[in-house]
Structure formats: structure tokens, C-alpha cells
Length: 241
Image (cartoon, rainbow, N blue to C red; front, side, top):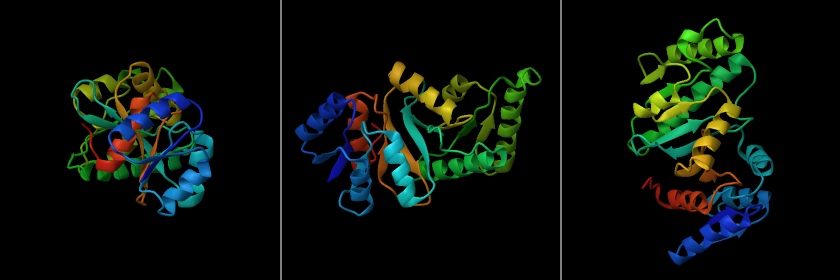
């Protein structure tokens, strides 16, 4: 048994529910954020999708129950037709403190690489910064993002296929990089919304990256029915088809 949270955007959740029902997949609709999380962590259901419930309620309560975690959106690469992970995508996923933020991004890369390894996909990591490398000196904030990205790459040097080439996300995707590390959660959220909700690039929601095995997928309350449907199908079979 699987569950989808239903709050705002009920019509799209119901469309996904009906489609899954047609395929003989048993799904419960839950309108209470705490109940959704409790049923999952207490083993009453096999997996849960946030659906259209409020992120502030579901994610905060999930953190109360399992501790710190990160989120990574799974999206189709429009250039290669493979998948890539985009993280962080939550506004509070990583620290505002520079040193802690770097540690958070390092952990995200480690967790995301292990996630892909489970599906026999070799990690290729691209770290984003706020401008082109030639933009150094033009803007203090951009400079800091460039230095931060270089520090992260240096940490993994020789152990992970990792690159930093500034802000050029389009080049990373063309070259098949499958873990894209955003500057911060706000930037990651904006990238997801532009690609997934405006450009309609197919996706499966955002998986939980943590040292715990939590069969939960975060989804936007503004998503269309296909994202809720894809998320449940992924939970069931881990299929990126």
C-alpha cells in the first residue's frame, strides 16, 4: 500500500489516483501531514508521496521524526533522455553559514552518488556557481559562490567525476552530468520550477537523501497529475522509464 498527500491542487492528485487505480495499484489519499509521515515511518504503508500537502507542515514534521536530510529532484535530461538529480531544492535544506553549507553540499554529493549507484548509474557531478569563471571580480557574491564551488571540487578531486564550470547548467546537461549541485536551495527551487513546472520536463519528485532509508518522495503542490503518478510508480519499481 502506498499513499499520496492531498491538500491544495486536489484535482491533479485525484487524476493520478484514478490512473493508478486503473492499473490496479492500491493508493491511499491522506489529507493530514502528520498522519502521512507517521503511517510511513511506522510501517503501515510501503511508501509515501507528499502530493499537494503543504511543504512547511510535511517536511518539518518529517525532520522531527528522522533528523536532518536533503532533497534531490529527479528530472529527465532533455539532451540525453537520461535522468539527473538536482539538489538542494528546499529553501531550508542547507545552512546559511559558509562552512556548514560546504559540508552540506559534500554530504549531498555523497548521498546522491550512492543513490545513483543503487541503479547502476555512475555519478557525474556538476557544481553550479553564480556566474562564468571569467566573471570573477565583477560581483562579490558571485565570487564567493565560485570559490565555494572550487573548494567542493577540490575536496573530491581524484575520487569523484566532478566539475565546476560556473553557471553553465546547459553545458553540464549536454555533457551528461547527472548530479547538479545548485548554489543554494532557493536557486535549486527556481531551477526546478523553470524546468519542471514551466518547461514541463518530466520528473519523479524529489527523493530523500539521508543516512536513513526513507521511502518518501517530495512533490510540489503545483505539480500536474503525471508527477504524482510518476512518483508512486518510482516508489513501487524504481523505474525511470
